[in-house]
Length: 122
Image 1: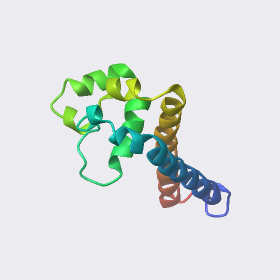
Image 2: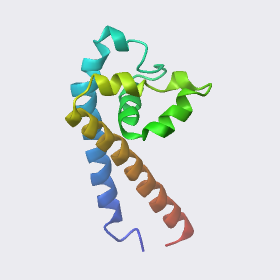
Image 3: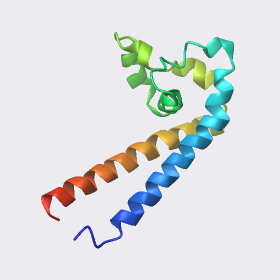
């Protein structure tokens, strides 16, 4: 049974690490990027507070051809400008942003798969 295994604590540890990376990335990198006047409107729209942290991480993590497809579409105002963000960040911040983005996705997919397996009776 999944309920009696190590999956639950492992999921909690993964989520805590993802959130701690998220907060650290927002404090160290996105806070600095918000102060650059060139990037004022290029961080994407801000419907929810803190969402721009995830958008900057996505702009640093998602491959350039995928971003180019979205930039040329009608929903381009939702994403951050990856060219300007890469220009204003160093290699450590770019790697850390990619780590934030992918750790969130891995934790989410892991949690979703556990919920599905529990619902199926495993």
